[in-house]
Length: 270
Image (cartoon, rainbow, N blue to C red; front, top):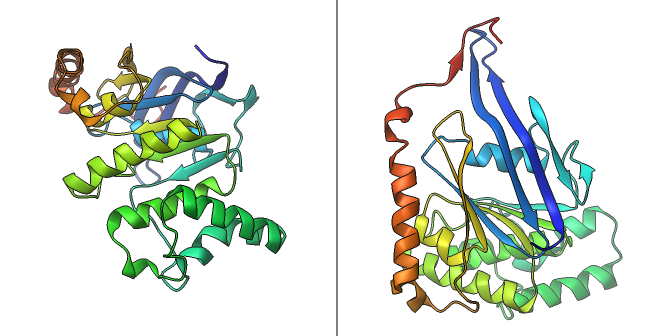
């Protein structure tokens, strides 16, 4: 594997309901890694804690136990070394595309000449040249998501954390965005943790994937995706792809009985 960029060690997370005092165990002993310039997909049944893992890596949530390291340094909160792309783009509707993209550098005090250069570079990279003066409501869903990604990339994060970023798009646009992301990473590699519930998407995008159990989420399976890059869409119909898809689906479906059993801990219990 390439040099480690992110290391999650024995991560556990328990949420406390403030009124009843009920403790819900979301994650138990999760360990995973991301190598430099690697796309790692995390998938599993609904409610298994995929997004919780991402939020802890992002620094939005603190772990109950365990450690998260980025470039060998413990994560203690949000930081510019990690950029997060959510399913909902959350663009500022009153700002143009250009203004949305430069918002981060501007509030950090980056000189105008520098952030303007970077903005034009990333507008070109994400294929939105000519749309700089448009507003979010004038763009398609896929275009808005590309703006959201450019807004993260302009801050030069070491790691991209993507939480089902294409989940709200229609099937055709979603496929186009998957291809676009692979092209982007082929031209300028990024280290990406990509959360998805879509098995085809995970296998198509990933260098490696992890499958989680039902709550409390644990790592059940790790697989290296040996499909060559670049990956055209027709790889989805190859025997190698279909066999891996069958294996991953079987692993996820075997968690179905556990979905009915909430992982709660009574007040005061450890």
